[in-house]
Image (cartoon, rainbow over all chains, first blue to last red; front, side, top):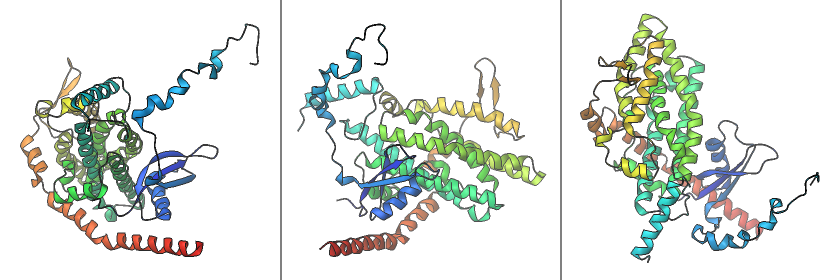
Length: 95
Length: 319
């Protein structure tokens, strides 16, 4: 039986305008508003962010690392998706 | 249930990842002993950060000026933050935060022994920042490369913040060391009291540290206790000389051949006594934390009640 009655939240911080939010860690808070305020104090004491996302950890669904082989297998054989697959003749530029 | 043979295969693949410096992440398979070792280490590290706020918190209201007060306050806030990064890392291993904290309060879980020494003068704020945070940095820098991802990432964040801690401490102690004779005496007294306990922060000597080999194999630990202790002595002795303070060790001498300082025998009886709970402040520290939780109970309950009320209101509006 878990004793923690405040849910766990995952915290994502946008460090500056134009960059994406990045996962930085988690914390406990009673609701979303409190989670944002706590995230401000825990993860941005040195102005590390200009925007905070919080998401209740239970709402995150993750792929299973043990099934990684079969999950990503379809992409392994498709080397032609990379530009390096193609030979560009000498003398051709801007490609 | 997994068969014994499957587990052997999983363990082999796990160790192969470790050997290839591939980080282990929360959902990856890991041996139970690895998980348990990490939960113990990370939670005790978190407790050390939290209990570590107390000796310094003791001086916030008595800081000699506003600048020193603001700096000390910021440092103690950082320690709280460090504790929270670490509890968060610990939870990724399936440990429950509240249970972890209750283990501290019941005496089941340990924390760094250094925080069981009292802070008797303002100079102790200098000695703690300089020596205790200095030793903590030595221990924590290699942990930034620890095999467990969330712990390593928390350590990167902690180490970035920790260097200000050491500098503010060194600033305090060097100012005092350059001050009046009384101030210099305060600085020397603080060094005298914190030097040996700081050396003890690296843990028992390698011959007496039975779990180290396994932790090294798992790359939770990257250097031995004695290695890091030697590094600390080598960098700290010249700093003390520079500010005119004397390290309280008559056996301390430079060895030209090894390019290291030789230092006197650590009082391991004192170390184990403090670990066992018989240091000068063990009781007071845990009691303070226990009361903080007890006295904050109504705040946590109120926050939950408020969150529920708000949620119900939102549901009523939607309906």
